[in-house]
Image (cartoon, rainbow, N blue to C red):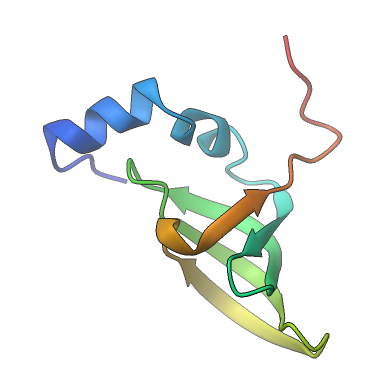
Length: 90
């Protein structure tokens, strides 16, 4: 991941983005604003909190499941990121 702007770099170190970046390589669930969920492995997180995931199961609001090899979530669509139990606070 290449940081492309000063604003993105600022967000990366001074916002909640660093928490999601700590989840890189881990399997987690992201709740979306449209009542859907995405469960998979976080591969990339940019400074604006856009997330790229692999090995994904997308669950829509009706509960139907759709597998994806790769999935991109825009930051504005994220409602909640579940922190896995194996990640502990220091």
